[in-house]
Image (tube, rainbow, N blue to C red; front, side, top):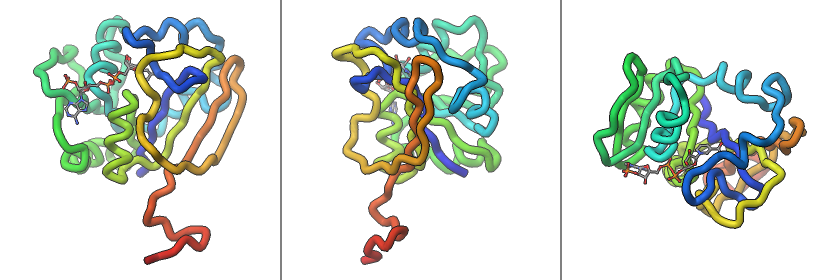
Length: 184
Ligand SMILES: NC(=O)c1ccc[n+]([C@@H]2O[C@H](COP(=O)([O-])OP(=O)(O)OC[C@H]3O[C@@H](n4cnc5c(N)ncnc54)[C@H](OP(=O)(O)O)[C@@H]3O)[C@@H](O)[C@H]2O)c1
């Protein structure tokens, strides 16, 4: 089981504007059947994780809840839940919530949808394995940050998908022993 942060970003590292707009993203061209596209990625996903801003954006901008997989929303608030959807509200340490999230994924992978700080909390807890970023050819100057942490990543794949440069990275953990890294 792998935990992925899969997201689109502006070239200057923002996943939404300051006021949570994604208009800049949806005006770009992307081939849903092309490399590193969402439909193939989501096939391997057993559970979704997101912060409350991302959840509220989805509630506001989708006609119906799109995800069949269990979805875990981190929030300190009592947010409304879509009818019939498998959505659970959680709060606090991601490490504590992780066993329930992992069990709900039933051996499939976990998708940290966003935002960047929630992905960062998974990285802090050494629970983030991969980061996939589709870079749009746009700069925003300011906004919600992609991944506000200091992390070493290893580039494992790149591709062009129409307007986007698609990248896939593995998170390099401090305790990693590959490539002859010291074990002490
Ligand atoms: N470009 C893309 O592909 C893409 C992908 C995903 C998201 N987005 C957008 O990016 C923006 C991200 O917004 P954001 O940076 O504000 O992040 P967010 O992670 O969506 O929401 C952050 C909020 O989640 C709650 N939260 C986070 N960690 C928590 C924890 N451990 N325990 C309890 N609550 C916790 C807190 O709010 P409360 O406790 O007050 O609820 C926090 O303010 C959204 O507009 C989203 O739509 C874009």
